[in-house]
Length: 66
Image (cartoon, rainbow, N blue to C red; front, side, top):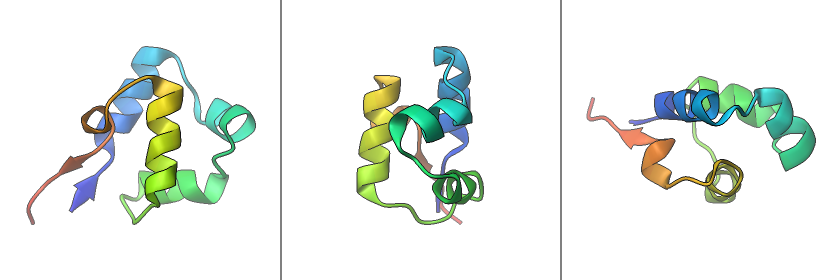
């Protein structure tokens, strides 16, 4: 399972809110809800997140075996 718990930590450290993701980065609220629920997301969304947060994929997501 891919978990996005690290995303929220990285966002807090970088001072980026979900409002900024929606309004300035073009990530819609439905996508943010899916990330919070650790549901599937497109790689282009992950690309946007890494670009906005200036981070690596491992800073926002991790694989955890079930």
